[in-house]
Amino acid sequence: MIALSFKCRCQILRRVNKDEGPYTKHSNPSRPPDGALAIRRQSIPDEFKGSSVVELMKKEGTTLGLTVSGGVDKDGKPRVSNLRQAGIAARSDQLNVGDYIKSVNGINLTKFRHDEIISLLKNVGERVVLEVEYELPPVSVQGSGVMFKNVEVTLHKEGNTFGFVIRGGAHEDRNKSRPVVITTIRPGGPADREGTVKPGDRLLSIDGIRLHGTSHAEAMSILKQCGQEATLLIEYDVSIMDSIATASGPLLVEVAKSLGSSLGLALNTSMYFNKQVIIIDKVKPASIADRCGALHAGDHILSVDGTSMEYCTLAEATQLLASACEHVKMEILPNHQTRLALKGPEHVKVQRSTRTLPWESSSANNNSNFLPYQHYNTYHPDQSQRHQASKHHKTSPNNPHLFWFEVIFSFCRLVSWAERKIERN
Image: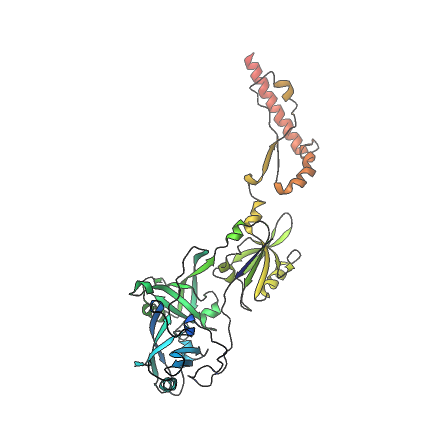
């Protein structure tokens, strides 16, 4: 058996501790917040730097719900170090943890101390315009172990957003141009509840409007102006598992997922050599199973986390898979291997039988043009033992169907031979 391990990255929800204040630095410095690589840098290299303008509206006496660290007297440029899950900033779906804040309502923050930045954000008013810089998403390249697939997803807006942050887009500097990439899925938002879209997916179109060649600002505008329900065309990565295609025998596949999430597999039963087996009936597009590239419709599932499927009902197998932990270990027999045993002519051995027919010895010398009946027996390579046990049964006159077939065929041959001899005479 070949062991194959694949780790699928899934968004794992985490609880955020309460902050000391609405805009102060996170109180637990030993636990770095989630976010882009940029959060660990003092600045972003220019060739990887993107920028956008974020407009937020808040009522008097409320806060934006974001934590800002940094300042001229602190550890570098001011940046977003945390977003409260239910806060205004988080629900706007325009900011990521790690974004640098260049200005607030046109006021440059380059020379501001940390406490001055906090004071400015508290007293800025109801309309807040932030100029932010961020690290551009990496460019996905098809090939080298990755292929692209597309899927359509229908989402319903909630607060005029779909629950994800986009970055990238066309840029006047071609080196900075990117596809429109979904970088963050907001926990509990529409996209998160629907479950198909994942960070790193590319947004190709919105209600049929292609985003190729659109800037980040233009893509944001299309998202805001579309209806409450929109159909999004998403491009996602699928791993190419060469080891699956070339492997022989059962495989052990390990898939990592977040607790409670679904692999995206629908199971069914099938008959294989007169025995019921559990198979993968369908793989949901863009699911964890689809993206990992190791699981396909038709694969036989032999075991899940060490539990054999041999005597499991379909309901039991489905429940076992649904209750699997974050690391699911499945022993499978890939679909292409199961087809080998049932496939057509190239996997059926055909031999000439050595049995001598009654008329061959007496007629061969008299008529060289006469071609005697050639009898063949067939068997499947995997059923050779069964063939040996039934070989005599197949060729014995005790088999009425075969016996009468040979009698009729022999009679026809003899009539044909007699007619030819009469014609010659």
